[in-house]
Length: 238
Image (cartoon, rainbow, N blue to C red):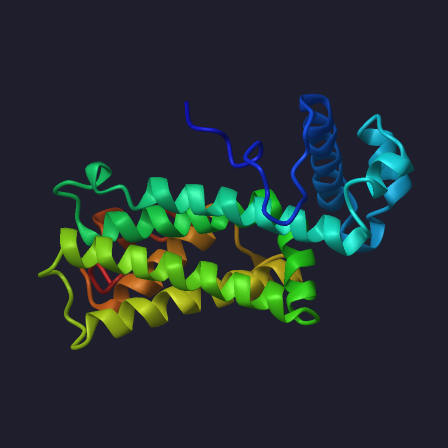
């Protein structure tokens, strides 16, 4: 049976020899992740982590030298979970005969959903990426790996759908743009247009339209509707 990303042994943490010790490690990580989501990086307190994990300060330092080492373990676990999302997204069996726009819509929906569920954690990682080159490089490697896999899926499943003269370049830059957009969303806490805050559904919808327009693929019919009123917009499907 395949193990969950949350229970697989982490390279950034020394291997434990006892099942009980491994369970304590998972409780500490779960408690730290929960606390990050609730209070952000500034509220990540070791005494509160061990209280929630039903452990002890000694138990914490028996597994992590300091808070930074704990954060490295959390980062590794988060990237594994996100890689699992990418695995499911790019499974070609899911997309046989589907138009490119459907794949793009699924990708943007996954991206927005992942940010919604992990906003505080990802915000902490973004801050640490400005301080720690290893964190930054791991984030860039994840983005590049996701880009390559999505590009390969789109070009293999929908090879004739792109009007952009260089589809590989267009997909690469479109993914980078979507990631950058969501990084801003994490830092600011929302996405606004004038005095209006976009819902997650609207944000995914508009990101999909943006990517489709840039790479030159035909948008899905429902993407031509104004999400605020449900009325058809002028200008067809783009």
